[in-house]
Image (cartoon, rainbow, N blue to C red; front, side):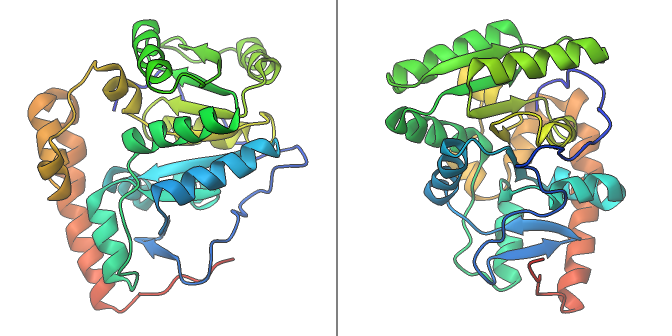
Amino acid sequence: MQQVRHEATAVKIGTGSQAVAGAPLPLPANRSRRILGMRVDATSYDAAAEQVITWAKAGESRYVCVSTVHMVMEGHDRAEFQRIVNAADLVTPDGMPLVWGLKLLGIPSATRVYGPDLTPVVCEHAAREGVPVGFYGGTPEVLDRMIANLTARYPGLQVVYRHSPPFRPLTAEEEAREIEEIRASGARILFVGLGCPKQEQWMAARRGRIDAVMLGVGAAFDFLAGAKRQAPDLIQSLGLEWLFRLATEPRRLWRRYLYNNPRFVVLFAAQVLKGRTQWEAH
């Protein structure tokens, strides 16, 4: 994922009428599971995009997480972060290990909903439905290239907001100004590319303060701009995208993958062996 832009903001999960602290919209029965305590929802690209569009048309303030092994392990290590993800309105299985985890936990139809692929699917739906979108994160160059690529691909896409925040904590005045600018833009879908865990914390702190559906899509900005290479489809399908990314950015990513991945395998195997196969919606 791209370099994170600023420090975490204290989480204030909503003060407006649309915000419901810790109460994500329930999916149909038996379509969610807990993987090491983190909720993961079985959905699809079209189902997720249609839900986002429905919320966006209603002007609702919600947030969507795309979950990876890295996110699961961040939640395992930090209960506060796990609560943020579990309070999201939708948590998609971004990584293949989580798809396999859902299958092992009793959802054989589970499929991957990957941030860099979900972003254009949502943009396609937004262009067709006339829903304005915005983008928050990345460098100015990455934003320009990504938006140019998306608007060329989806000519009806209305991009009404874009912002590349500074590489430092925001002042209270800057944060308030950003929120007001997003609200004034009329964006009803806001793609957030700050990297895990900062983007999830950023979205949770603004639910109820921004009248948009926020999607934390991590490295999608860099991939869609062509600034970074994506793993070939075969490598992705084998669940080895982490190895491809480690090979391309070893100094930045070695700890994330070489420390988290083995722990995930051991801990999740223990979960399965103990028979913790159900998650009750609440």
